[in-house]
Image 1 (spheres, rainbow, N blue to C red):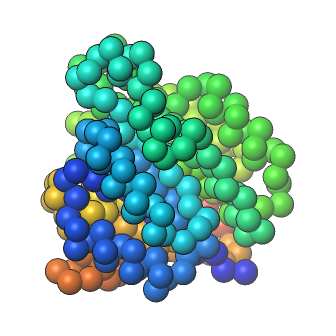
Image 2: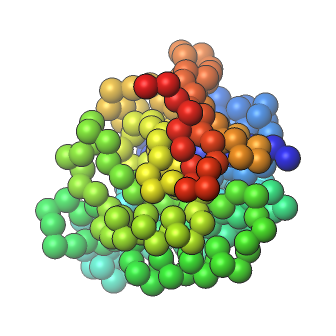
Length: 267
């Protein structure tokens, strides 16, 4: 049975382009996905009006829908709030659950909050996945062995391609990839870099989405991913803005093997 997942990221309400917001809403109605996954940075500065705009946008999308926060979704330089209660405004407008789970007869999807108020590095936009979060995912995977597709959604990607290598890798990424591959994770979705990507690490398909609706472009048009899974076949199609609509721009195919997923793309 085929599953279709629309993967959006980095909407950045406050720096959004209204025409693209309307185009995304129309796309969700056209594609009718089994799940919409939004991997963080729904706002630009976590201002109340931006969170309200994000909430109004989410209300227009079909369910089920899973969204996690990103580093832009907490206060910036209001340090008393950033370190005291960074998710207060998010919870008041977008709901209390920062790490939601969606389960259907076709898939199991779980969100992870990878954003942190700060760390021992200059770039506070960097993320981290903690051992306790990895253990939680392992428990979810172990309890639901019969799901046809099992996916993780986090804002920060679990790998960095050369164009985004300067951003700094998510803390504990290698540990997470090793343990979650053993636990049977199929797919990990992320954003943050504003560049689309799809590949395989440790038998897990890793897919990044570009910025869906903002003007914060870094070398490619606005975009999103349409992921199609059918048994032992999985396809990640990058859709990009063509000036008046989103349309497929590239696709990557993957095949399940005894060692996990492998790419079917030609070298």
